[in-house]
Length: 104
Ligand code: FES
Image (cartoon, rainbow, N blue to C red; front, side):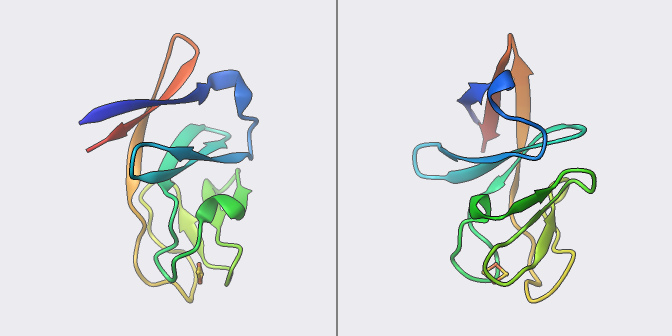
């Protein structure tokens, strides 16, 4: 397990998403109303970055810009077609005002 600093906590507004390069694993870091979430920044339908999509902050979901599938940021499960496979989720820790992503 490795911990990668993503940003300062106040850099990301609620409803915002940012791509974080974590040394080989692209991560989409999202801030929802309940806090920060991280998923792999590759849609499970096709190779397309989820960080280009739109955050549905009150549902804690992200919508892929390419074909419109939405994914839960809690467990990565697709909520709508055409995607049928989940995306990986990563734990997020906020410590001393910084946001960290935990990678396996
Ligand atoms: S690439 Fe994301 S839904 Fe098709």
